[in-house]
Image (cartoon, rainbow, N blue to C red; front, side, top):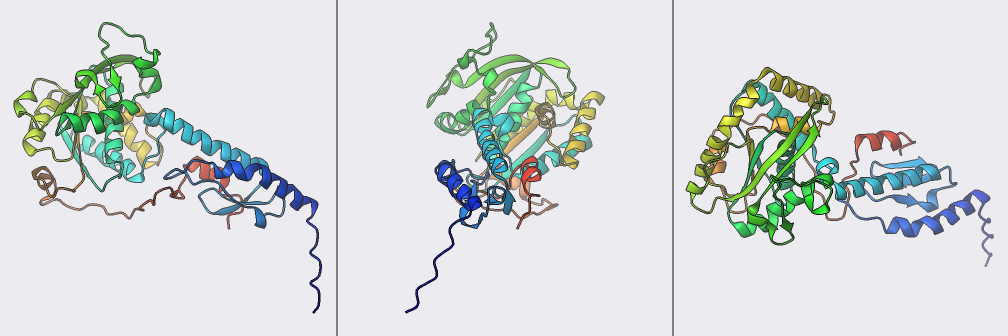
Length: 357
């Protein structure tokens, strides 16, 4: 038998790669999974030097230097930390919500001064509740004397699901339980895990700035109501925005529409419509919409989210029977723990041009 020729010893450059692998691989293995932000993958065996590391950041294999790899890893960790600390401002949202924002803004320009209704249907974990809650929260925070209703069928369902989501959406600086917001006589806020908001409401005001730099006092009264009770209890408020989940009856939708009608007049002024035109321009350009403008888009809007697990309700029928399909788009289903391979535009622009394969 002929002996195999001895393998060549690793070069100095490869030794440096092996040393970096020994140091970084354990930390990369501990990166948190995320439904969208892909974990950092390095093909150490295919990396000839620290200036030519083969890396997949979620937008295809590319060549990075070691400093670029470290910066990408830090950037991803910061994205996840920001999202956890302040999801209202930093959480990732699917493209369908942005397209919905644009359609709602255009609809407002076509119909100033009236109540608008939006039905968002889809499967479980489709971001319906979060997306609706984020838009209602934006209206609450950046509207003077805001009044919000969030409706569920029963109080236990509200406390377990909707109220926990809404509490998570409050900006950190606005949460009175942290002590960072100065309370006054109008402030009423108590929340506990499992029990939700005391008496199913909170009242908060804060000084904030609109997209043009104008300062206002935003916030007001936020209430959780239950449509499983007598409809006569759904009276009295002049709402600025509302959100109903699941099987809200048509009669309740009619009552909410009446409650939204008074403040719908806010949307007919030239100044308000100029803000909506600004939002349309940003959305058409693919640019992010500031929270104050997002809240304006949904002023006097009732957002109804629906998972068709119990069939076709009368409310859904009211929306869909005879409706015209104006747009169809494909989307992806995310397996648990697997990234979408879609990262923020600034992230892709920063790293994907580096010799993608």
